[in-house]
Image (cartoon, rainbow, N blue to C red):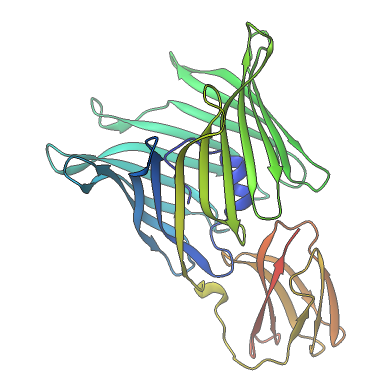
Amino acid sequence: MKKLYFIISVSLLSIIAPACIDAQVQSSSLTKQWNGSSWENQVKDTNFIYNSNCQLLYNLGETWDSSANNWDNSLQFNLSYYNSNGKFYQDSEQVWNSVTSIWNNYTLVTDTYDGSNYLINQSLKPWDTTTNSWQNYYQTAYINNIDGTPHMAYDLLWSGGAWDTIGIKNFRYNISGQLDSELFVSPIGNIVGTIYSYTYGTSYVRWLDQTWNTNTNSWRNEQLVTYWPNMNMPDSITLELTANVPDTTFSRQTFTYTPCTPAAIAQIDPADPLHVYPDPSIGYFTVSGLMQGQSVEIYDCEGQRLASRIADHTTMDFNIASYASGMYLVRASNQDGSMAIQKKIVKTQ
């Protein structure tokens, strides 16, 4: 889900498309373009491969050849590496050479995290065929809020042996903590550039892309992207062109998923004395059926431990109001590690 073939906000994807929700991972996606009367194949992602913790290792991108009526190799995304906390930090992309029938290096994306495991930098390096090496090109440096959400970001371009700031992003959030807008401005004269505005419905998330028109001193609609998420994973994404022809549907991307249970948090004992309620939860839940001295831990779907407490009663209350929406797992075990029991809890707000 990390790679989309039309421009999608990375910030929004991080909100609605975590790597593993409710033990589901992406198995394919298909993008079609509207030609005025029907939908035509455009690109698709297939051959998704995951490790034992349901982390993406590889997927293949193909483009549609309408003259030959078949799919051709386009890009492959592989060598996805993860740090000790399970965060993605490096991915290389290769492009298919139809003349030599081999894959050639294309781009290298590297993420850097601080001591709290919050993203602070993302760099993009293209492959230089002259030197046969990755070359500096583009990076984004993040300044985060105390909860790890981005507050500001600086877009930097490599030029003449130094990094030049080419844009500044300002992130704003609504009262519920959801991303409300991203404002892009130029570092020269603070000229307004682009704004992404978000609206949240009960069954969709919508993103409006606008650019500043210096002639009219007003915002000009460019594109409207609508996500139709299923348990925070998009069933489909619709892109509409709004600049010249209002609300004209341009392309649509649909997704399929497959079950995946991370080995790090796999069920160990089918016994079920534990009760977790209410499920789903808006931020608070109770665990009952505990024994004093048991260790109670909360994991996200990638196997990262987020909280750990020792039970001093048979019932315990937990506050996950600050956690992102999605599925979490509650695991109870004896202090020697025996009799591990796992239950899931879904946070909806």
